[in-house]
Image 1 (tube, rainbow, N blue to C red):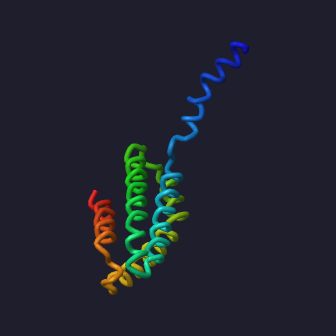
Image 2: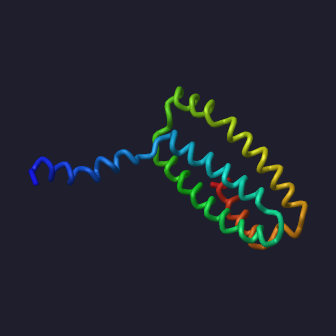
Image 3: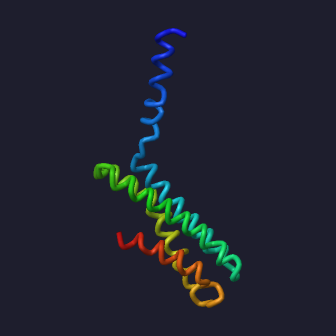
Length: 132
C-alpha cells in the first residue's frame, strides 16, 4: 500500500465527519419531519391499546427533537437571507403540522379512554421542550 493511499484512508474518517456536520437546512428539515411523525402517531391513537403504544413513539420523537434543538443551539445563527429562505421553505409545513396536531390533541383529549396514563406522561415530557 502506498503512502498516498494510506494517507487517504487515514484522512477519510475526518473528511466524512466534516460531511455530516449539521447545517441549518438539515436541522430544520429533521425537526419538521419529527413534527409530521408526531402527527402520524397522534392520528394512530384510536383506542387504549394504540394510546399506550403511541407513548413510546412520542418519547422517541421527543428525544429526537431535543437532539435537533441541541444541534441548533451549537450552530451560528443563519444569515438573514438563509433565515428567510428556510422560513419560506418550511413554514407552510410547520403551520399545517401545528394545526393538524392541535386538532388531533383536541380529539384525543375529548375521549378519556384515549388519554392513558402512559400517553399523558409522554405528552408532558414533550411539553418540556416548549419550556426550554
